[in-house]
Amino acid sequence: METANETSEEYFILIGFSDRPVLEMILFVVNLIFYFFAVMGNSTIILLSLLDPRLHTPMYFFLSNLSLLDLCYTTSSIPQMLVNLWGPRKTITYIGCVVQLFAFLSVGGIECILLSVMAYDRFVAVCKPLHYMVIMHPQLCLQLVAFAWLSGIANSILMSPLTLSLRRCGHQRINHFVCEMPALIRISCVNTSRVEGLVFFLAIPIVLVPLTMILVSYRYIAAAVYNIKSAAGRKKAFNTCASHMIVVSLFYSSIIYTYMQPGNVASQDQGKFLTLFYCLVTPTLNPFIYTLRNKEVKGAMRKHLLRH
Image 1 (tube, rainbow, N blue to C red):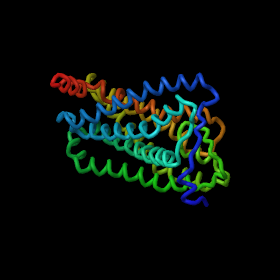
Image 2: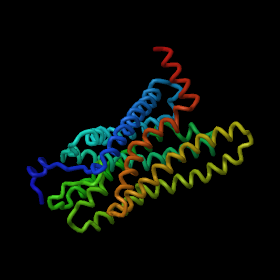
Image 3: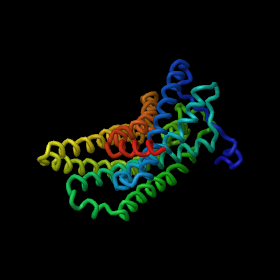
Image 4: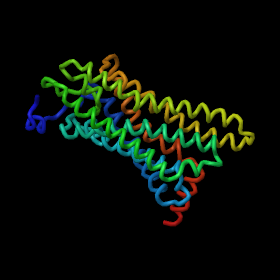
């Protein structure tokens, strides 16, 4: 076991694409642009949800939580990634690595469950519209969000120490941009099958059960939308639900590929791009897919911009 003093002074080298300087500069520019829009878009959703009474509804309450998660995702990894892409130093401190690992595991777990909560919200809105405000009352919304946050944090509290406790035998070179669990497992010099088995086991309640709930909810939503007689109502319901399914597909496909085979070394470059996708691209797209094109949000933005 490493001593506390040795651990506190340790650092890691994040290799990333250091063998391809041109690609690094391209990624720096692209990441900087995406990070700017991710911060601006998600911050706008949170502020509008707080300031505008018309957005004090369950749907926007869940969306503001999703925006907060996306800000945590990007801010925990992208600034460090930009520093490493820009300069010759590709290092991260041990504490910085711990923070990234904890944030990735927490936010990933929370978002998986929150997306299933949002699917249930859309199910009630489309299939039981007359009882929507009775079913989705504020207390239930708070309880569902609290359950999502506590479950994700509990998952991280369990998996982060286990991942960091794996012996590395002096290996400090991580073939990745960030301190992600699969990348840390790969540099271990001991048998990691138990940890990988636990990861797969925990993925069932954290990833697969919420995904199943989403698919079941949207099966009923699709049937309800098909039976709506009004063309305008059918179009509005379809647009809202289709945008949610786009986000779900993008997020879950990359998460399942990365975390349900954590020790896989078949295509590490592909894994790096998938990480960029769900920690930067998806958080950037979420505000535009979900809300910034909605009439309610456009009206709230216009109102507050004219006021100031």
